[in-house]
Amino acid sequence: MPHKTRVTPRKQPKQDRSKMTVDAILTAAAHILTEDGYDTASTNRIAERAGVSIGSLYQYFPNKEAIMTALRERHIDEMAEIVEAAVNQTAQQPIEVALHELVKACVAAHRIDPTLHQVLDEQVPRLNQSSAEAKIILLLREFLVQRHDRIQVQNLELTVFILERTIESLVHAAVIEHPEFLQENQLEEEMTRLLLSFLIRQV
Image 1 (spheres, one colour):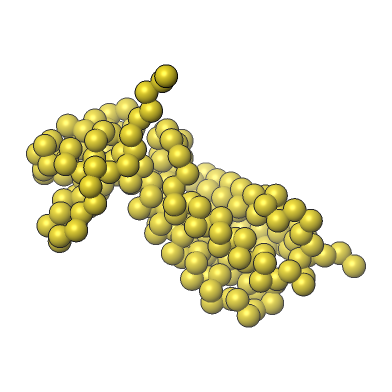
Image 2 (tube, rainbow, N blue to C red; image 1 turned 135 degrees about the vertical axis):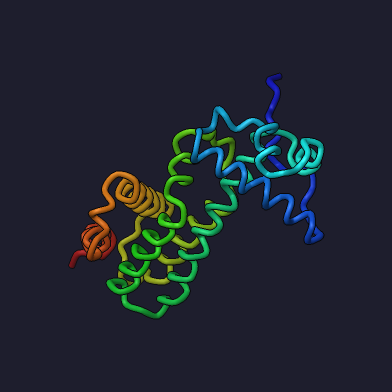
């Protein structure tokens, strides 16, 4: 039976000092990732960059993969907070307004740390779906369910999948490859029109 890499922390920090140690480890990992790439981010190098002993690092993370999983979780959780705020604030708004605000929120979320997002997406092995990623999926599902009277949804899960992948792919590519498209809300306007044509019932 193949060995399954453990990606969960050994223990969760509870005291302020422990939280600071974990934060230093994750911040160091992020710096090494964005500066030199995934292959160079050994646990020894991360500990050295964080200013902690390797023993202290292993108190919280059993291996490099667990650190990367926690780093991805922290990054995507920050993104999910922005998306959640947009969904909650536009719950009573028309679909045209709400969808534009959702796209704007996704653009803002990708601007938190685009280089880290790119490295996590392209270089770091994805061993499982993070709870933050699952939260974003739930938020998009909630967004659609709130507007069931205006949106044609024959298969909710498929529609959520298309919505999430379209937004993620276009926004990610624009932030990384074509930041000029984000000027004067060009991308947001075009994406809103594209998604509206997909979502709204044609009568």
